[in-house]
Length: 382
Image (cartoon, rainbow, N blue to C red; front, side, top):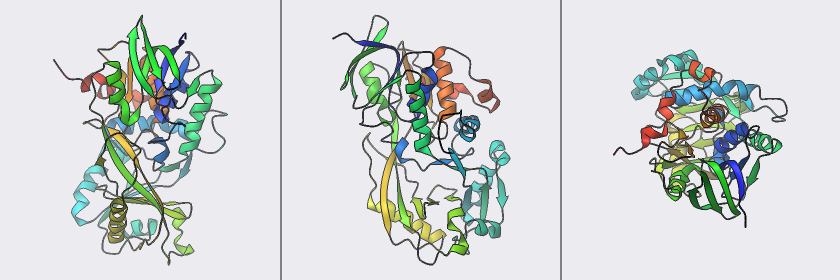
């Protein structure tokens, strides 16, 4: 059977892969290969769904700021509902964490988007905080909840509208470079492409091995979360629906309102093999215990729980760009827990690099150092 040829085959239909594919499809023939029965089954579908321009490494923060304009004002027809709704984030510290909070608040780009608030103001913003626990707090007013599904579907729709193709149940089993093209064997057929994009999330090093590329040392870390009922006694005059996401500056826990309930997490980072992750009861119990220490919330009923894999390399920056040693092999990996909020910028940046074009000016203006994302920084040296 003759292979169908594409200019670019993107391996992985999560948020980053979909964003890049949509940015390429207007000019190139693009195929997205998704191993699951639907795109976004793993990390994309298990996000905490928050946009914060001050969360993550300096590179992540720059990419987040460069994504803000798109998320607040997407192109006509991209989606039917707003992608962002106001939420706010309150970073809290007990007495032993004040120095860490102050150091974070002093970062220039963090300082520009936040303000220190008094203990009294913090307890007005998040009235469930336990008196006597809180020593200092930092507030990011412009943080927002995200409609992850609408963003992901918007990119997939844009891809298809421009002639791109998405194939599900298409796990890649073999990759071979010959005649200036990649020949791709999948569960849904065989294909060829001039360029392949490795956007396989926690599985990127497995895909690299199939292609003969050096691994980048991907580290999938499991994060657990659950939806819990609001405890009895949380009355309407406390307006729980308006509470910010409240997060421990040491990332020991966070919680935020979610459709009349609470989304809570121990902000765990448990090393894991690539898999369909699930939450352990002990991790949910740890979240409940930590939140009970910091607040008056007595969580007694969990409605459902889940876990997702946040994939990093050692320096916690993404890996975006062509492999220096393997022609036509492009990395789009290690986005950690930030692939949702950075998708508009990452999609544009990856498209520019794939085309051999300069880094977009707005990203440079936001302080992005693309060398921090280059795949060769992760490659072993001879």
